[in-house]
Image: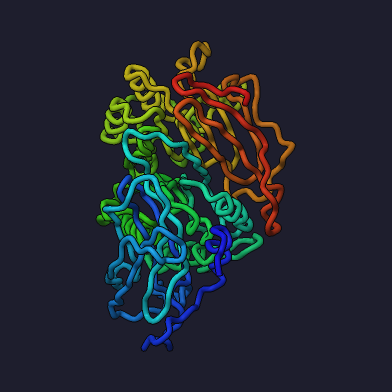
Length: 500
């Protein structure tokens, strides 16, 4: 029987639990309850991921696995039926990493689709679709979707399902993949029921999210590139400082260590991103042929927020040269990468609102944004102008769609030097309010606002980027259709938002 790609990928989730004929381990419960994923595409390969967890919500965080190692076979093929296997092998899953598996593939052909699957304990996994990046020197069109902020209790993950149905080339997740809080009064209930702080808790919370079939479908449909924000650890934390600005004591260092480890265990990341204690190198650069370079930032782990307490009040030190979201090393790394001009487009994937956004006539600003770090932002803007760049900044965090021109001088509105596209959330803040107005004369460079859930679609070519802000009318009810609320065009080398 021939299956269409979409049916095979998404409908194939229903085949979970298939046992291989002749296996000696058929008594073991199905271990691939958390699905499969791919990520970090390069011209010669990508990462494939799964985790063995027959009882994924067990309180000990070990997913129902024993302390024994488990051999996991993997296959990558050029067709969904696996008649043409391009690569295969076996990897050992260990309890130390919650029996998660990260296989980094090399030696594949650039710019093409592949399918992958796993086998362990007598069972075979769902099938995932991935693709390699194009070869350097080529610039085929890139269809990319990006989103952020998927709060399990706030609604259903319909946006992920709609993303899967688009079969994009690439999906970006810009932070708050999980939420750390305890059980609330939403349409679904967090497990564990309390706020998570231990490694076992974080593993169970990740597993709860990963069990969602819509999220599994999105992971199986395309490779992902991920960065975190705060809720993967604790709301509004900064470096090793708690959200309430209390000292970075041993308890919080241990909590961050646990959260970072669980994050790596559940994401399709390369071994270069494996954590080392309370640190994890997440900022990195990916190339999509000669079309685009993705500069993925970590604006949480290195920020110096201590002068601003909980991040909710105006901080007079916003223009202090030492006040930073990125840290000095990451700032230099970004400017160096922008200066290399590796592709037609430079895309900066990061977490918090970049363009200036005055909130009231008195000039107050949101401090959990680049407005709280104006010296850091100013150095980046001056740096990319000096290097001849006009980047597109891709942002999450704020649970709303926004689109802005980035200005050389926000007070005089003298020159557009870049563009910012802000995605709304998957579910956070619930259904929203389609009639709400968010733009104002205080921010003339801010062109669009929409308080509904969804994602952003970009289709990028060597000459232009077509942008669609996609929304759902409801996430508190399952399976709403997706629709486009607003579209823009950005011309290569000419920053700013244009009507399509």
